[in-house]
Amino acid sequence: MPLYTKHLPKWKRDEIEEIKRHATGVKLVGLVDVEGIPAIQLQQIRRSLHGRALLKMTRNTLIDHAFTEMGGSISEIRKHIAGQSALLFTDENPFALYKMLEKTKTKMAAKPGQTAPYDIVVEKGPTSFKPGPIVGTLQQVGIPAMIEASKVKIRETKVVLRKGEVINKKMAEVLALLDVKPMDVGLVLQAAYYDHMLFTPEMLAIDEQVYLDRIALAASQAFNLSMNLAIPTRQTIEPLLSLATMQARQVAVSAAVYERGVIDAIIAKAGRESLALKSMMKEN
Image 1 (cartoon, rainbow, N blue to C red):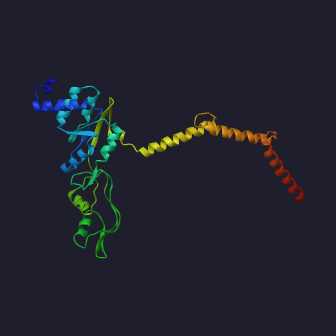
Image 2 (spheres, rainbow, N blue to C red):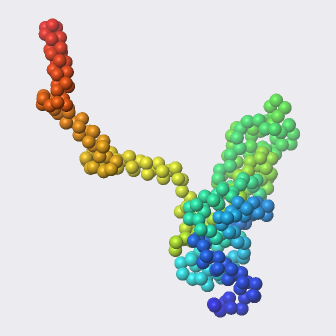
Image 3 (cartoon, rainbow, N blue to C red):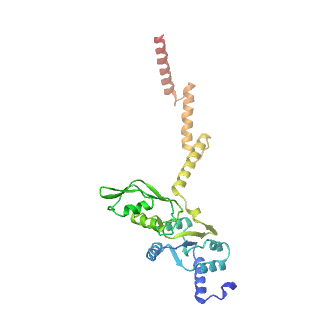
């Protein structure tokens, strides 16, 4: 036992041992940030993960102690501890885990001090507000508003915050009034350890349709290349034979090779040529 954890209180030592026991009993250990998640939503998330993953809330320092003691490549997960970290233990693969965590997120109103996760846009058009101080409130944060048909109307679509800008109190209040909920609240994956490898969110946030499209394009290009180079494969052998048959027939017809399979085509070709010649003679 490392010296710096040797004299920890018993409850902390028990917590560290529990983390280590869970970590060695599953295929994947995930580190997630739970900061800012309301207690009710956290309970809902636990229920949604039931049977697929175990969410363990504990202190960052104890997570650090546990993985330091475990050592090896899994200890690298310590570098991603930030905010209010918690642990996820599961047998899912990291890509499935990432998708699962994305589904736990819900839209919530912004709070003062938070940063815009993307460009926040307020669309033009009528609102449900009656004429009053709301017009001035909207204009104070740069949203052009006017009165029309006894309702407050936003005159033009407006980007009220750029990605990364801090949301002040006034802006948070206005967004809440307009029912704009820009914040994704849920478990945020910080890192996942699986099969002796550490995965970060950037590695897991893939667009499946883009990859499927790329695979389909690669398959199409490989098929065309095989056809052009006459490389027989399980996928190309039938179309190659069909193409070869068609080309052989065309050569036989052009060269007037009297074979059973092409005699009709040769006679038909001769007929067309005689008609064309007859037509030319009449014209002359």
